[in-house]
Amino acid sequence: MASRRSSSRPSPNQREGLHRCWSQECDIDPLILRARLLRHQGLKNQARAVEQEVRPLF
Figure 1 (tube, rainbow, N blue to C red):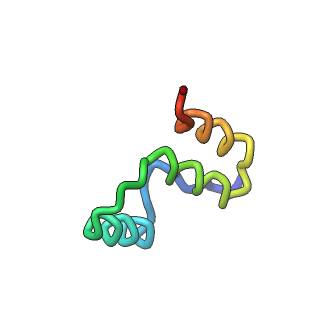
Figure 2: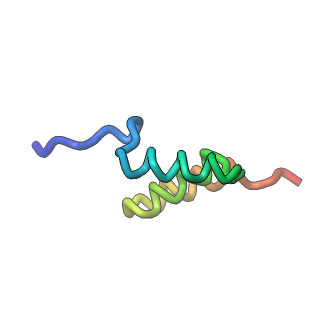
């Protein structure tokens, strides 16, 4: 079986991107970033589930 990379540890490129974002004081919720990553990986159902968590309740 093929080895899968753990999604809990960011790649060096992801880490660099986060540091750039933080230095620019971006206010991006981690759940939004997770949903984007899931969608990019083709995991649309999981992305939709995460997106449900960031929707306002009013």
